[in-house]
Image (tube, rainbow, N blue to C red; front, top):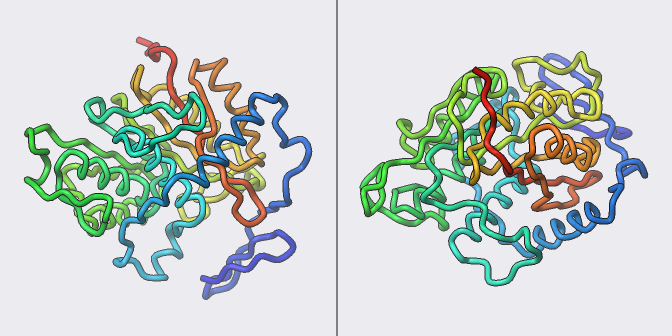
Amino acid sequence: LSIIIFNNVLLLFFANGYKTMAEHHPLRTPDQDPTTQTYAQLNANAEKRSKSCRSAQMPSLKHLKMRDYETVYEPSDDTYLLIDAIGYDLDLMDGQIASIIDRDDVPKLYRSEIKRTCEIGCGTGVPSVYLAMRLRAMTGGKTNNCNECNADTTKGKNDNGRESIMHYVTDINPDAIRIAKWTAEVNGIPLEEFHAIQCDLASKINDPVDVLIFNPPYVPTPDEEVGSNGIEASWAGGKDGRVVLDRALSDISRLLAFPHGVAYVVVVDDNYPEGLAMIMKERYEIKVIPILRRRARNEFLTILRMTPTRMFQRKE
């Protein structure tokens, strides 16, 4: 697999020819600018946080070869920013951040409340494995390959005998399911704590989760490129890069535990995140703020932190 950018179009060359993904990523256009000063300030704060937060340590991917990335998305700038955001909130929870940038820099996560997590569209499983490693270290569980995660006690429980946290990951791509479990195992996460489920979005996850992670296919493409179960599913986002993300909004609102649940969602400016935040507030009463924001080549990546303001009303 070779990747070449030509005139802002991404060309993917495989051994048997090439496939052109209709990605067009120009720099920001005026209509992508925030429409309110409030959201512009939130973006500015998120950029400040991304410069001050420490870089999260990637789980080991030494078990993967280049051929694995022909079928599963290879971690990139969006992955790194996503685990930085998760690590930032874990550091807040653990009291490792001395100064805050604004009132949104309050701990959203409390270890005693985290019993179940879910990652939609897991790919290699890096974000969930990183989260699992950090949480096991904070509660006395053993992990591998992580300087941030250096505790070593009885597998599956902390020093006080607290039950293990259950981590669920989903993907439509069967190769992603296989690789995510492999990534967990290589990094010392017991497979009885790490459940990989092949399904569309979170269609097979029913119980509320305390942490939800989603790095959706956010690249604007023709709608007909959306919906495969191969590697194309990791990037093709349809109109405004929002087709898959918009489908997942009801799952996010359904699954987030109230009042402490938190979701981390990757977006780019092409996705009109301010409008997305308004939809989540008006339709689902979920608060959305950009927590980290960073420029990566010709796009701005943002991690949105989503928290429920009311309990989800389940239909009978």
